[in-house]
Image (cartoon, rainbow, N blue to C red):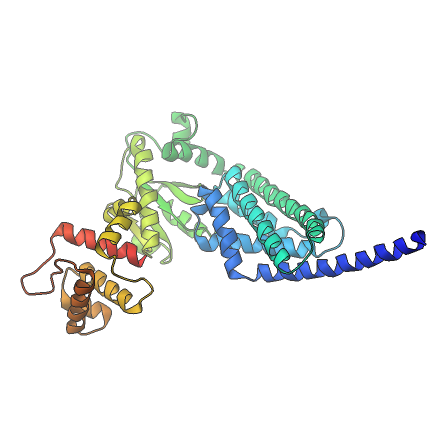
Length: 398
């Protein structure tokens, strides 16, 4: 009897596994369409790869969405995963090569995202009542597919590297990495001359956060129009330009930060400032051609986030971030400071009456017990008082 009963038992177990597998596939579809889960995976990838984190969050989200969709489509297929359509994964690898993301940093981000996705799948599967043995079986299959997807990302990356190396991309990238990042061997005068660099000339360091192919081509064309040399370095379009383009020549949605002209030996130091300034400008929503000099205040303050939080705790502890009225008061105060402590200018910027601005500032003063706010005739904040309060408000609203 046992010889007869076992096959039917096995068949029943197989049916249960298939049903549970179908439940798991439905769960994966829910994960792929859940914006919160997507953000969680993006955060994991950015945390493990600071270079990948330099790309805009929207670019990281697109990256993860592509991998999730491709992995899910492959997982639902039949047969060897290596035979599936991994065009999007291959294209993604090629894009990251063109953006100058080192392969090691790319893989750190991919693997961190992959690990987090599997962790979430296990948590969701258990919550849905899927047995651990079924979870293990399905997740082993899923891991095979994600491994194949990862191989195609790497394959696309290396294929793009070979194509790019046929032109001047490799030479430009190598020389600029040394000049701007201090990474690599000293270039020869002949290498510099072939790229139009060297001698006693002075150059503007330029850096931009553009990432999509069309914007990259447009920005590269504008920045090299007067003899500039650019390449993708760790996800940022970076380079040296003897002359800056006219502001109107750039795409209005592009952000480009430039330095004053400096000798080549000072380019590394200046480039570091430009990268910091780019991040500060991006956080405040600025676009267009911006000078690192004009961004000096934002850049210096952004470099001290702990001090900003301490200021907020000291000056604005009585404000509740979840209270809309408190946020309205903070926005009004920030506009007042941004507009030279002028009630009329702040009112115009906020589209309210000057008396409304005065009332809100008084209420903020009462709630926070700030000693002065410059709202009465002859009363103005000092420069340092203004900086401290402006900085605290910006961080609190952040």
